[in-house]
Image (cartoon, rainbow, N blue to C red):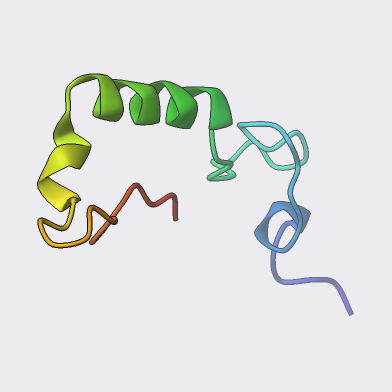
Length: 64
């Protein structure tokens, strides 16, 4: 029985587009994510999420 989905649906292909089917693989661009995180801190956007009472982080940077 042939598979319904391309291999990139259940496996990281480390490529975009998929070398098997040519479609978007939705791979995370970790270099871009690191640049966005750095910019987030450089611009001081993280300061809005610091607790006034204890100085800890209320919320932080999340990669999904």
